[in-house]
Length: 327
Ligand code: SF4
Ligand code: SF4
Image 1 (cartoon, rainbow, N blue to C red):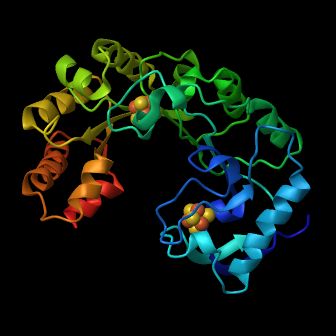
Image 2 (cartoon, rainbow, N blue to C red; image 1 turned 180 degrees about the vertical axis):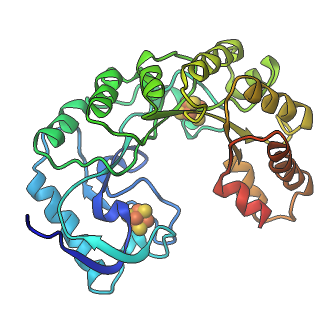
């Protein structure tokens, strides 16, 4: 057996063995990752103007290797400058993919007021996309995909993608264990349920409320009961309470009361949803960055942290934006 070759330098998992299929403000393309908050801007392209054609993997890895060589020489790929994901360690010197983000679609069955698609809902809901299944199947057939990374989605609502079931089944069948699907929770997916049952997949639903009125105010749809019901159904399918994630994005002046939060925490606990996430709405935070700290919102985040501890939740994830406020 040939020995695996590692080399030590500063790089990141996405640069080394990741790929993001993107479709959005920068057009339809294939990139290293979907992270754009790095001071360098992220957005490092593999193929621009890509619309689902068969991929020449030799060409693909030739481009990825060029980025790797920049890192190995002690430099930094332009878009990656200052990125928090860069780290110095031993990196395997092989051409393979283990982490994928599917962000090639924007259509959604929900209408969150805070969503980037709100600026042109009709446009984003009708944006042309492509079937990604044959590309991923080809990755499996050519044995360039490995199991140790993360499989995730952007979007858009993943469950309404025509290829969603086939795609997820492919990963489940091949033993992938780190699949994370964000969903509006409006459509119940048997394939998500299957992944939850085997413990290979986690679903994340940002319900952001604990009442029909607040939900409707945020989502512009009267679907609170449907989403609550689906959250409960997914939760029931869990073997160990760690595959359904309930998220709450605090929107100042909309859902920022302790009562709303208390009822959300209670709902999760009662339904054995043991992983919860707290976040803060992006456009408010961007406005707020230039102003004095908002004590009420900071106190509310601290309240969630305290309360979730008291209630014995398995894990509370505090998103980067909320962490920024706390700092
Ligand atoms: S260093 Fe940051 S921007 Fe560059 S590929 Fe990794 S995650 Fe993306
Ligand atoms: S569920 Fe996600 S993609 Fe859909 S409208 Fe809400 S934030 Fe946007």
